[in-house]
Structure formats: C-alpha cells, structure tokens
Length: 210
Image (tube, rainbow, N blue to C red; front, side, top):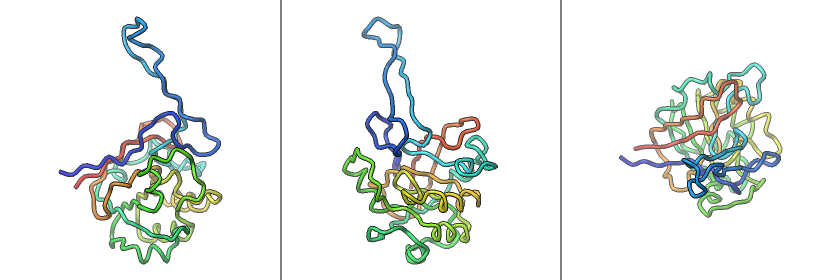
C-alpha cells in the first residue's frame, strides 16, 4: 500500500495567516532539568498548518467542527492538478481540469505546492485559490469536501464569497495541504481533525493511500 502524509509539520516559524499568532511549541518540563517527564506546551490558531474550516467559520448558524460528519472526511478522493498560469481558478479552468463525474471529494494541487516542496517559511499573498464561480461550480457538481495546497481556499483579499458559497452548501474545506509529492489521480483519504467543541476550525492529520 502506498501512503502519503500530506500534513504540514507544526513548528515555530512556519507560515501563518497574517494577523494570526505565531506557533509556540516548547517543553515546559524537561527530563534534563530533573523533571519526571517531558511535557510540552502548544499555542496556535485553529487555522494553522493543515486544518479544516467548519461552516461556523463564516456562517453564524453553521456547524462547528465537532458536528461535522466523518463521512465527508474519509473516502475516495481525486487529486487534481490545475495549472492556472498564476491566476485564480475559475469555473472554466475546472471544466478543463479532468474532475471525474460523480467525485465527491476533490483536492487541488497547484503551483502553491512548490512552496512546501522547497520549504518556504514566509507567507505569500499571491497564492492560487478558487474564485466564487469555481466554488459555485463545485456546489453544482455535488462535491462534499474540497482541499487545496495553501492556507486558504479563497484568494487573499476575497475570502468571503468563496468560503461562504462552499460552507453554506455544507462543503467541508481542507486547507494547508502539502501535495508536493503526490501524483494526480484517485486516492483514499483519511482526514482527522481534532474534535474541538464549538470551534470554527481544527488542525488535522491527512493521509492518502492507494
């Protein structure tokens, strides 16, 4: 069985969304200082690294992380490579992307993956994302889960339209995927977000198998 871990490693200094706190991860108790065990402290936004967006992220009446069905996060998934030429992904690009009819879960591999492949540490604002027409196209096609290889499914300065269209349709969004070492095609996905009560998002471990 081929297994691909497409989860970003959580560590201090990793790129985070502008305005979010930097990751803090350190040992509060240390064996080398005489403590009985090593005990670490972690502080970060729930939208750090590889994470899911629950509908509550943009919809006041939307489901929170602990209310999301795991059926949406486990199952057959298509990884689709989209070459956008540096522009945002629209519905016309999706028509040409080779998304299979009836596919319910789609992960987009774009030029963003290059950032993870070279270990980029700085946030960049010109990442490839889905515009609102692409979001509406996915809703029409019956997609239930969508993921992308940067920290937002939506363009940097236009977060609301894309997020709102997807989340209002009940689509779960997975962001911050590392698809740099994954070939396009059909995979089995397991995405396990932390079960955080009442939260708008949660860090997740995501793996693909074939």
